[in-house]
Image (cartoon, rainbow, N blue to C red; front, side):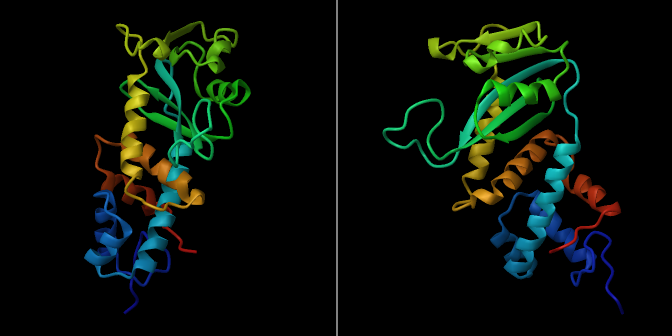
Length: 229
């Protein structure tokens, strides 16, 4: 009898077994742990997880988390520890990620080549309505926001040991950076080419932290099953 799996295109893995794999993935287990618990080869699990992360990344890019509201902006650096002798914001060889979060809402991240005003402010213009209240630190890249039409721009001076002044802070996006770095630290030896997929998975998990990830993922795959390359 031909095996049918609504969520994995032309799969030899049963739907029941695939659901088990998804549950383990939602529990944030590693590929090795999922392979051991599901009795599916590590190679097959790696292919499934990579395809799933790709679909999750597509889902994140299609979402529009920002409507008019209070938005925090910040950039962060992922990778090896600071290299001795290399100065400046961030560190040599690290991956730069620009992030924005709507207070009490969703986060959006984007890998960037630099923290130049040209690059970061173009993302802001594309993602955030002009009527929003924007919160940043005093990094000079954000100097042009008011001239772009963002009249409500508030800044916190981290360089002066100022981290919150009443409603003025960027604690939300900084909290996300901390959660993402702790989570990603368990993937030792992560290849730089896969970092984007891991980052978007962190974004997805954070944005749906109060929801049932298992049901969301199955819903995503029901109409468009995964295809393994």
